[in-house]
Image (cartoon, rainbow, N blue to C red):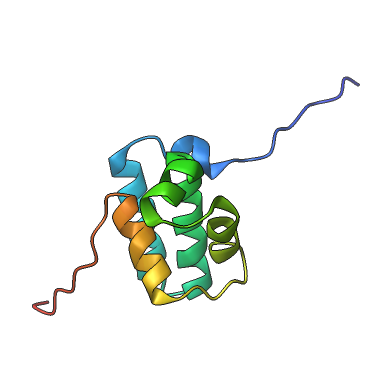
Length: 96
Protein backbone atom coordinates (compact mmCIF):
# COMPACT_ATOMS: atom_id res chain seq x y z
CA UNK A 1 0.00 0.00 0.00
CA UNK A 2 1.51 3.37 -0.98
CA UNK A 3 2.06 5.94 1.73
CA UNK A 4 -0.15 8.97 1.66
CA UNK A 5 1.54 12.24 2.44
CA UNK A 6 -0.62 14.60 4.48
CA UNK A 7 0.43 18.17 4.96
CA UNK A 8 -0.33 20.19 8.05
CA UNK A 9 -3.30 22.56 7.71
CA UNK A 10 -2.15 26.19 7.71
CA UNK A 11 -4.96 28.69 8.15
CA UNK A 12 -2.62 31.50 7.11
CA UNK A 13 -2.69 30.15 3.55
CA UNK A 14 -6.43 30.86 3.40
CA UNK A 15 -6.28 34.34 4.89
CA UNK A 16 -5.34 35.84 1.55
CA UNK A 17 -7.97 38.53 1.14
CA UNK A 18 -9.72 41.09 3.29
CA UNK A 19 -13.09 39.33 3.16
CA UNK A 20 -11.64 36.06 4.48
CA UNK A 21 -9.70 37.90 7.18
CA UNK A 22 -12.76 39.86 8.27
CA UNK A 23 -14.92 36.73 8.42
CA UNK A 24 -12.26 34.81 10.35
CA UNK A 25 -11.81 37.59 12.91
CA UNK A 26 -15.54 38.24 13.30
CA UNK A 27 -16.12 34.53 13.86
CA UNK A 28 -13.51 34.54 16.64
CA UNK A 29 -15.16 37.60 18.19
CA UNK A 30 -18.61 36.00 18.09
CA UNK A 31 -17.36 32.87 19.82
CA UNK A 32 -16.36 35.00 22.80
CA UNK A 33 -13.27 32.98 23.69
CA UNK A 34 -10.37 35.34 24.40
CA UNK A 35 -7.69 32.75 23.66
CA UNK A 36 -9.25 31.98 20.26
CA UNK A 37 -9.48 35.70 19.46
CA UNK A 38 -5.81 36.26 20.29
CA UNK A 39 -4.92 33.20 18.22
CA UNK A 40 -6.95 34.49 15.28
CA UNK A 41 -5.20 37.86 15.45
CA UNK A 42 -1.88 36.01 15.50
CA UNK A 43 -2.79 33.96 12.42
CA UNK A 44 -3.85 37.09 10.56
CA UNK A 45 -0.63 38.87 11.54
CA UNK A 46 1.38 35.92 10.20
CA UNK A 47 -0.63 35.93 6.97
CA UNK A 48 -0.03 39.67 6.51
CA UNK A 49 3.65 39.44 7.45
CA UNK A 50 4.84 39.49 11.04
CA UNK A 51 7.84 41.71 10.23
CA UNK A 52 5.58 44.35 8.70
CA UNK A 53 3.11 44.20 11.61
CA UNK A 54 5.98 44.45 14.11
CA UNK A 55 7.27 47.60 12.38
CA UNK A 56 3.82 49.20 12.32
CA UNK A 57 3.19 48.48 16.00
CA UNK A 58 6.67 49.49 17.14
CA UNK A 59 7.18 46.04 18.67
CA UNK A 60 9.93 43.55 18.00
CA UNK A 61 9.02 40.38 16.10
CA UNK A 62 9.85 38.15 19.11
CA UNK A 63 7.66 40.31 21.38
CA UNK A 64 4.83 40.17 18.87
CA UNK A 65 5.06 36.39 18.54
CA UNK A 66 5.11 36.08 22.34
CA UNK A 67 2.11 38.42 22.76
CA UNK A 68 0.06 36.44 20.23
CA UNK A 69 1.14 32.95 21.30
CA UNK A 70 -1.30 30.38 22.62
CA UNK A 71 -1.93 30.95 26.32
CA UNK A 72 -0.60 34.52 26.29
CA UNK A 73 -2.38 37.36 28.02
CA UNK A 74 -1.45 40.47 25.99
CA UNK A 75 -2.39 43.92 27.14
CA UNK A 76 -5.32 45.59 25.42
CA UNK A 77 -2.96 48.22 24.02
CA UNK A 78 -1.01 45.49 22.21
CA UNK A 79 -4.16 43.99 20.68
CA UNK A 80 -5.37 47.44 19.66
CA UNK A 81 -2.03 48.25 17.96
CA UNK A 82 -2.02 44.95 16.09
CA UNK A 83 -5.62 45.32 14.90
CA UNK A 84 -4.84 48.83 13.64
CA UNK A 85 -1.68 47.55 11.90
CA UNK A 86 -3.83 44.89 10.23
CA UNK A 87 -6.06 47.67 8.89
CA UNK A 88 -8.91 47.03 11.29
CA UNK A 89 -10.85 49.18 13.74
CA UNK A 90 -12.60 48.43 17.00
CA UNK A 91 -16.21 49.59 16.95
CA UNK A 92 -19.12 49.19 19.29
CA UNK A 93 -22.68 49.11 17.97
CA UNK A 94 -25.26 49.01 20.75
CA UNK A 95 -28.20 49.71 18.47
CA UNK A 96 -29.15 46.04 18.00
